[in-house]
Image (cartoon, rainbow, N blue to C red; front, side, top):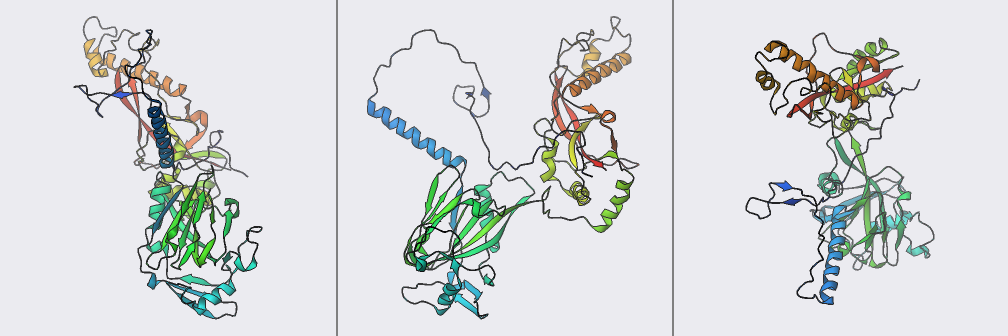
Length: 489
């Protein structure tokens, strides 16, 4: 039986936002003395100028307009490239002499290849054996000369090297440059793809992303220290923007690497002299949350404790309260967006429910109400002309707390006769107004949603997030909890 949605609403797809954006709304910043400041931001409406514009005293030359236009165009291209980079390059701080490549030929003999290499002076015998074991690259129609094809080492033959990018901060550099907005709980892993070899006269045709359908989010290319001329790498993104990397020509003192997003294609220009060797790595994105391959697995003991709870809850919608605080604003995001950020006991329970092939959902909840999975928490505005507002009921709506408002009406003219009764009535009115706001935002009572809360005899700590709202002219905070809701078939 397929699990159904807890509240009957579609579950939005969780996608990690990997880039930040900002926009300008015409606001201006001023300080007290009139100079520009970053402390206060004042937005004023634009005034219509009905008078005819004045002509400038000095007419600007046409060359000045052309120079300014060229400058603005250059700045626009620069900021566009800065906003979303798709490549990053660098070098590995290591001694190339410590790099050794071990491989096994078709005959079953293991060979070792030492670096750096310059075939213009000497060709190591192991390199000739390596070239003989390689196969043509799987891109047809471009390499017309069989002796100048782009080669790669077969995946069925053992190959290893003393170079491990996990021992160098390459993945950290890739994350900072290409995935700056990667949420907490996500991490990058690198899996070696292939060893590519190009000799004099060979070139690699464009490699589209359709040839790399393994779920990678980026590719890392490490150029080994083998001397060559030419062989520049060209990378293009999905919009056709391209960047060229020269790679140092396999200098014996450097090991270069280049990384680009998985949506890009790349090619290598013709090798004019020497030999170009490079390792490619597939970069995959892993997460602690709702991923196909989560990092953690609940223990058998915990699963045995969960089994009777699910057995006794068949045919019902049940929910657990999350216990960890996540510091988010429920009015700005969905509760389901917390899945990649789950930690501690919350993450353990979530993954345990996934083991039983259930579909857990996260919902905002407060005061016996629960919000649908596709709704945020909105408390609305304080409506002064509402029939149940304090001002319409004869209570002052000054910018003060309910206690101060009640104190101002105490005396013989009080409508309810006593201070205690006034405080109780004010509390009831404010609770009713807040309940109306919550219902208007789409929340429904837990009883109507037919959700049964599973809790201990003595309730423990709960996750508490806060939503700001205005009541009686005062800023207050609504405490919102997070419910993990599942339907047990």
